[in-house]
Every structure is written in structure tokens, then in C-alpha cells.
Length: 162
Image (cartoon, rainbow, N blue to C red):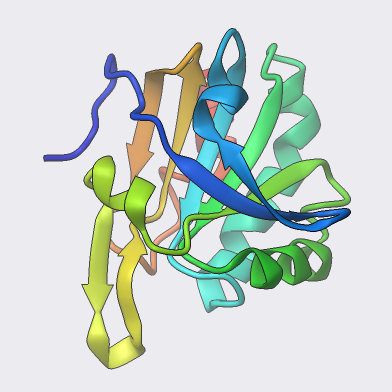
């Protein structure tokens, strides 16, 4: 069963590379008393993720923040080193988007938004989605029907609902 609008996010730990190497990031620390956009991709450096999804949030990042959103966070089932490099390669980090890893797919599975596509080498990956979270509660949730699509989860689509 997947998470839905009105549900509270479960506690989770992500990883990101900071000044001193990999560090845990508690989801509650990202969400408590804050409004965030959380969007997820099936994998760093993959086609639609790199050419459509992240760029859509770069394009609207300032507009999203102008709607009172404290932070935009990209989650992927990748290690934090890959996500740091990908944030630099896409320009997402420079645009103020935070990239965090869910390397064991624990958060992704807890919210019921995981999938596997063995022929493509994608095992226990995240579905493509975007959500608005206010103080830990899901207010908007847009999940794509297929991993190769980026329509309802694009930055512009989420911005229109905030």
C-alpha cells in the first residue's frame, strides 16, 4: 500500500555527502515545522531523470520557494557519492536542490513507491513522483504511471498545485 495525501511520512534516514563525508539526514529534520517539496527519481544519471525531471525543478525552483516552500529535495535509491556528483552534473545543486540517497530503498519501500525492472538493471528503485509535504504530512502527491514518464511529477505540474 502506498502513501497518500493526508498521510504522515514515516521516519527515515537518508545519506548525503557533506564537508566531512557521508552523513545521515533524518527525514523528520527536513520536515518538522517546514514545508518541503520531495521528488524522487528511479536513478541518477538515467535518461528522463537527467534530461527532464531534475531540469523541471531547476526551472521552477525560485517560483516554488516563492510559494513558501522551505526546501526542494531530490531522493534516489543511489549512494550519496553518486548523488553529489549528479547534483553537480545536472546543475541541481547550484539551483539549491538538495540531493539525498536512500541507498537500501528503506524509505522508498516504507512509502510503497518502489518498483523493480531487472532487464534495465533497476532493482528496488523508486517510482517517479513529486510531493508537497507540510510539517511531515503529504499535501500533494503526483506519481507517474511509468518510470519513463515525467508529466504529473514535473516541477511545473507540482508548482501548479501549490
